[in-house]
Length: 230
Image (cartoon, rainbow, N blue to C red; front, side, top):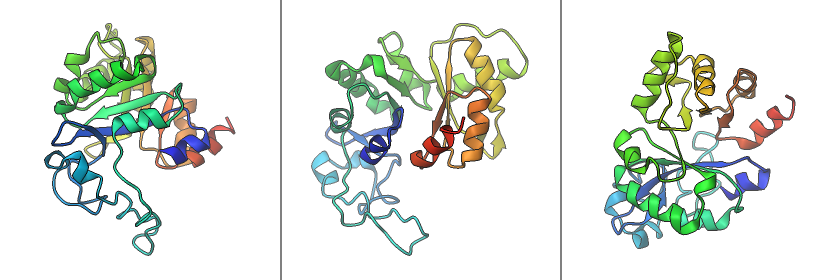
């Protein structure tokens, strides 16, 4: 994340799980096996146990020929550590991977006083419903996004929504989503649209020109270079 910050990104997007001892930790997968030197569910490990793992152990940019971050001290950070290590005005898009994180993220946002610069998203509506009216922006759950999609493709009026952002992929279960139509409908309701994960500059430019406000990418340097040509 600090590498992305050094490039001058507009914001950071990351996912949260909860350790066995109730700490918010930054991790995409439910389990440790794919990306770290550990094994098993994140939720069955304490923070102290997670800190012993090499979070750079499995990353390879060339299909296994090299592992540039293995053994370099890359760990699993907590949410608190991320907030405290990045610029204080940098927006954060946080995806809750488990409803167990809901109460913890609410407390953490209040503790760090970052409500004005955070979007909390999640596929599961039960993770987000308790956060409505808490004073910070929410992303749409999967069900809410599809309800908006139905209205967008039928040109029905968009009612006021309980969320302020759509964070969506280009495809769902192998089927392409009408991203630009969805973004236009969302904009009429005052909702911003971010698309993940986009790593092709041509795709990013098409989306930006079509009204997508945010691109979430594995290669932010490439996206920033593409955007400079707009």
